[in-house]
Image (tube, rainbow, N blue to C red; front, side):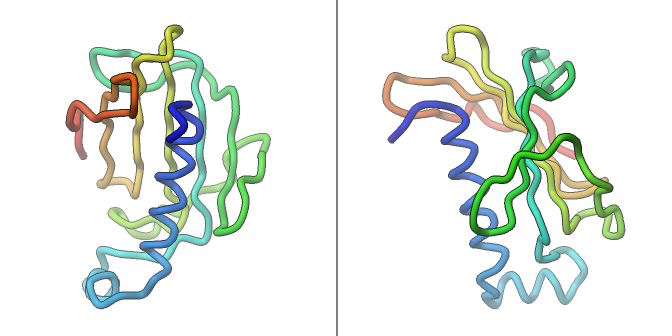
Length: 137
């Protein structure tokens, strides 16, 4: 397993895309009750700094990519995001940042205006391990 945060985040995005496009019964149920949408794109942003106490990335993004199921495409800025469903956007956003030693990472996942969470991760020498959600909306 590659310990670079960008690859870890990319793996998380690929898994999220696959799960949302698989169309299983659980996902269909969430779509039926309005709690699930199939993304048209997932946006990923890397940030240069972090507030480690609140588990939020800070500053302007140093890289932004879109993922539509095949490849990560660099984009210059976030396009207009989908806010039509407060808990299930069709354009979710994943933000991350790492410390200078590349031993800590913050990973924030935004699924909609009322759905998201941020977690602190640490590198244990073998893999990235979450220390649990630091915030949740």
